[in-house]
Image 1 (cartoon, helix red, strand yellow):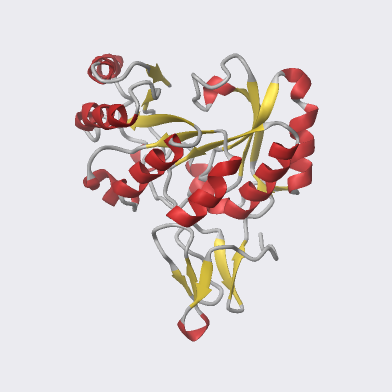
Image 2: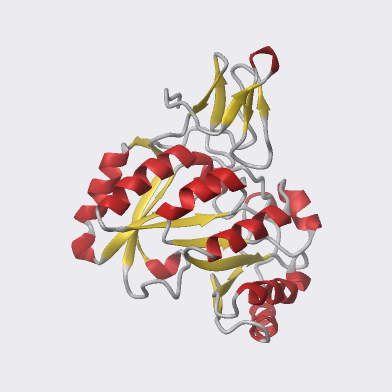
Length: 287
């Protein structure tokens, strides 16, 4: 999977280590090792974006599947994904490319090929590219290079992300992005400690993005885990804009939670009613 693309947002550290500055983990990566995301690696003292151009999934999806319900509804978007993630959610719904991707089939794409695919699909109501399936922001360089070409072609760029990124790279990328769906895991640090992140960073990403592009928010409803936080999340989203769409996504047993039960429909309806007290656009999905 090695690639020669030098990463952005890093600096040299001691003893030939490389300190990654892309996300708040600030990984200090030793020679021939990777950061927490698994895709940014130290090769001879230089940080390399090893997943650059690596595509594990590609499909033409309804825009509502991202989910984006208030962004050009009724259109489609070419969705591409790579591998790796800077979180380690034990309930990950896409763990086969985010967590345990050894042996996964990879196709090599250039940004030019991505743009060509997007333009070819325009006749099928395609409006652009969605960077999704795994965590796209750990593949920052490829996303940015593709996004420039997509924008130049008059098409749109969409991110489906956990929102775990530092301010400087986020602010550099956002002018190229038309819409985001940001996954907020729960409104407490216990949940974020479990997945390896900090809730405040994700909230900052949502607040920053909402100033410049279309934003929708999703929470995967884990039974007996984050249910009690939904109304607090809805209140917080409403403090930014009551019209921001909020998606409540039903959980199905996956990965290390494979022995759990799916989210009961009655739980989804109860949480929907709670969120609707504060937000104009609340949706139930994946049930």
